[in-house]
Image (tube, one colour):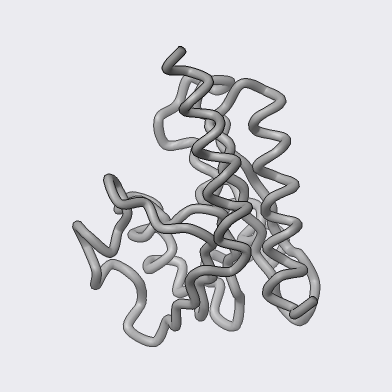
Length: 145
């Protein structure tokens, strides 16, 4: 198992937590120096807050851990491609690297705002893609019945 797969599994664990709470199952962890410094999952239903996405929760937790707003040198792992709002926050936080599992063809940042991330940020896609896609697809399929 690669390091990216290891941390994506932890993001998938967060997605499972969201699923158990009736939330859209997206999970996120922020890593610095081989340590998870922030984690989160969607809480939009629980908090009645459309901005309570997994990435926003994890960025806030990581910034709190570091006692600062910038996440330079950090990698953000998220199960689904960030939306425009989250990509903007990732950019403002100056996250150095983003790793996501599956694309979001309807709301992903790469479609609407491909330059939202910090210019020095690198992106890796497709890590545990099938697992990340399956959890989100099953959730929405169960809602359509």
